[in-house]
Amino acid sequence: MPGVNEEEPGAEIPPYAERVLEAAELIPAGRVMTYGDVAEFVGEGGPRQVGRVMALYGGAVPWWRVIRADGRLLPGHELRALEQYRVEGTPLRHAGADHMPRVDLRQARWDGRSG
Image (tube, rainbow, N blue to C red; front, side, top):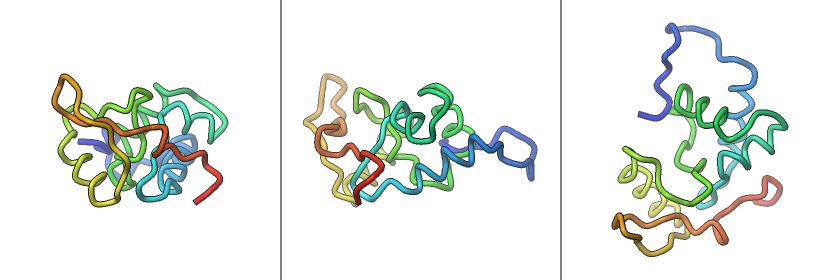
């Protein structure tokens, strides 16, 4: 499950993780940022670091809005993410060989500036 904190209960969230989570909360409904976009937005780290933060702490933020660069849905959470995308009106592309749609990054990508 996204956002399962593997740290001790009540452990303080590291400052970098706080910045990543704050960025995820800023993404408007129906829009997305890639892991790399979020790293660029916060000014440090990279896609893997953002992915780790989201995996450990992202359950309380709109985790489905932070995605892979290829637009594929988060493995193991595809149906939950797809439900959110449909509710929010996130642009999707037709299903691929895996029979799951992908996020249409050309239309859904958020640049961190406009609403």
